[in-house]
Length: 346
Image (cartoon, rainbow, N blue to C red):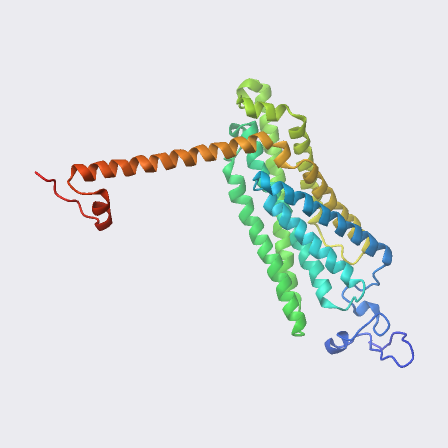
């Protein structure tokens, strides 16, 4: 390949079309050809403004979601982690605007925006078991608890592959070795995420169809649980809005998890930024802590009652041990501490 140099001010060093790794560390927009940068094109001011706006949205969303952690829903933790990854990713993208050869910003973007949707997927998976409980486990092809047991481990594997691949690529870049192993690991994690989401969508559609068919066949009274709290949840507009928001979020995350569009600025804005903003907005407005508030409180109350019952049962057992110890002529502490049964006193 013929050598070429970029136009640079007088006295400024310029490098060839294929600068060495040591030269790349010194590259600027004036000294190196743009196709030797991480992005292969000049990041525009307009897209940088768009990314700054998306960054601001995610920061505000994180602050709002943080307030819901007091409501005690497990949905919130992965949701917060997903938004935090988006914040880191867009901070890296904005940082790259000022130096497209600087690896820190590039890897902040790649790792943050790659694993962020995986955490958002996990938050969605945690919602399905609750929806199955509201509409009746009898309508589900698999037990409600198995949705999290199946999909959360798959999501964890996807996260490990993507995060590990990003870390491996970063190390390879520092060592001036091939990035292919790290890139392949990230791609494998992304493929697993897409496949897992596709199976999840299929099971959601199957559950909805089975519920509808059973309700038509035997009537809603027989097909759906008639518990008063569950019936109120199904009839509320907030819960129906939550179902619509969840569907929108799943479709947006699924679309975002498709092939990377990093090398087209506006495609990246539209198919990464807009899709994730849509998913986060839907789940923020129809947050489970609001839409399922009564059921969450009932679940917490049930857990407290069960914990109290267990405590009372434990106290009762201790009293029985004590009574047996007294009847046997020794204290319950003596019998239990030494693990010996004392003979009864005649």
